Amino acid sequence: MASQNLNFYIAAILNPQNDKKCDYFPEGLLVVKKKNGQKVIKDLLPLTQGVKKYGAFMTEKNTTRFESSVILPGFFDMHFHWVQDDVRVMPKDSLLEWLEKYTFPSEMKFADKKYAKTKAKSFFKKLTSTGTIGGACYSSIHEHAVEAALKEAKGDFVIGNVLMNMNSPEELTQTEDESLSITKRLIKKYGSLHCFTPRFAITTTPKVMKKGSQLADKAKCFKQTHLSETPQEIDFVLSIYKKLPGFENVKTYTDIYEKTGMLGKRSLMGHGIHLSPKELKTLSETQTSIVHCPTSNAPIKERGLGSGLFDFKKTEKAKVRWALGSDIGGGPFLSMFDVMRSFVDQNSRKKVSGATYTKALYRSTLAGAEIMGKQKSSGNLNQGKEASFIVVPFQGKKLQSAEALIQNLSTQHKQKREDYDSMIKAVYLKGKQVFSQKA
Image (cartoon, rainbow, N blue to C red):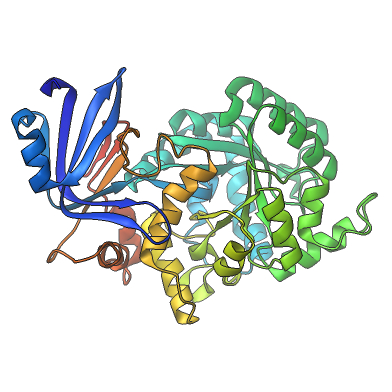
């Protein structure tokens, strides 16, 4: 065990395992080793045990002590629109009106290649600084905007251009052939990093969803779209599809996605708030995942779109996989700490039990990695995984439990939520520091 192949990090450590369990070391040691040119986690243990075991190999050069700080895994944000960065703090409205008033005009600007490149550079730098190192992302309709995003994103991301062929502003409407041609080119160039992304059933024709899904499935690409975010949206979707050939008898929003091949184990449905038991059964049987976005669905007075409360208990009872997302720009802030806080707060207000901070952390980290098939290499700090982690300052006395510490971290900027986006001290991706907060 050569000391030059080891790095040691000392801090409090949180390591989520599932909805109910998060390993916690009030004073911990994270041991990272170099293996086949990669930096992976060798060990995670209390500091006193760590010093006994590794003390002979710890030097000033290879040991970093983070004072008054917590180490935890980087976040997976499983649903966000990078091209909506400019509208996330705009006044909120109901979903369809908000899209028309703010979102679509903002996304039109990405037709300009130079603008898209500049915005991609600044957005993904900002995203890294909030500790998000993986997830699923929506771009605008433009091919070059997806390419700019994939170039700048640091971590395990899948990104796709939204497909819009009907019921859309003229400047954001593609022909069916354009949508499918772009899909083919991006899959050929990026493989499974491309995510097939019909915006939602309102804007994307059945032909594009069906043929695009076949292309995505063949290339083992993820697919993402929006499902049952608001009752108004559901009514509008069904009113459109009941007039389309082959869809006259559809009963639910989920039926439309099932008929067009959009469901499956690599399918991510944003929101899924207003679903019937039959729809949840379909999602479970097809192994489709839901991404819950609490800050976006929150009441308008909390800067959300007021879409309603996701029923995680009903979803879990139906055995549907789910994880958390920020839904930038429906959600106002990039930080998953704010998303976690919102998830717990909204359920607490409605007297829903089981919405713990431990659960929120798991659903913001390992649950997303599991859905993306990255759980063997990422999602938490278990031995053998990539050394990807974040460091968060923590003031005050040592807390007795993981739940108490996660709560402390998640609620410290509750009164001034924009501060969540600047609370990370450092971000490490595969052992390399990719962000450090200037003193």
